[in-house]
Structures are given as structure tokens and as C-alpha cells.
Amino acid sequence: MMAIFRSAGVWIALAIATAATPANARPATVQVINCDAGSCLLVRGHRSTSRAVIRINDRVVEAEGGRSWRVRLPVAIVEEWSAPFARTLRVSVTDPAESSQRTEAVRLPVGLLGRNLELASLVVRAR
Image (tube, rainbow, N blue to C red; front, side, top):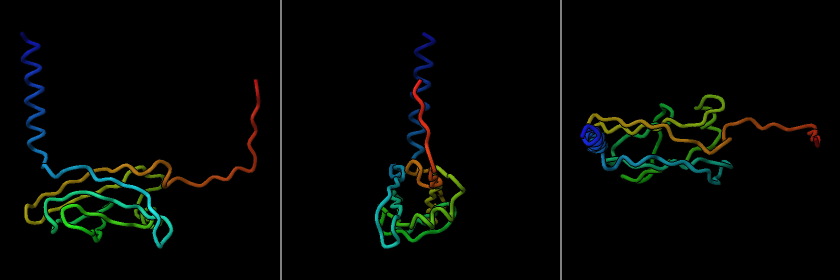
């Protein structure tokens, strides 16, 4: 009997968390694309209105599109705005009309901000 109540409590908590999350709060995505600057990051996301302000790593960026927005940033700019060897971008969507802000950590492609390491030699031994 106690297991039923615990299970119901989990479902109620899940329902409350889902109701508190806006329907348009789909996570942002990042992908590497070719651009005039060489390589760029294309960051895409959704916002409740086209007036919502987009920030990437605490810097306001000009977003294209309405509720479905996208931002192109050269990888050199992302390196400048990020900590060394960062694995995520901090993406914030602020709606001034509703006085609400949603911030999320968006994963960068593996090794994007890593250091290029050139090996002079590599020794492999068989055992």
C-alpha cells in the first residue's frame, strides 16, 4: 500500500514540474557549420515571443527568426567568450514582458575548444 502512495507522489511531482516548464522551453542545440569566418557555431532555440532577448555566455546576441531563433557565431568568438576547454555554452532567453528568464547549459561538440596537439613522435610497443 505504501508503494502505491510513493508512486503517486512521484507522478504528482513530475506533473507539477512539467506544468511549471513552458511548452516552448525546448532545449537549445549547437552545431558546427561553414561560414565566411571559416567555422561557426549555429545555436538554435525557441522563445515565447520574438521580443525575448538571447544571451550566450552573458553577452547579448542578435538572433534571426521569430519564436524559433538562430545565432551564428564564429568559433574564434566562442573561444574568446568561453573558459579554456569549455564543454558548454550558457544560453539565456529573457522575456522582458513576462519578467522571466530561462538559462541552460548547451553542450558543445566534443573537442571544439580543446587545444591542437601535434605529436613529434608516437611510440607503440607490443607486449
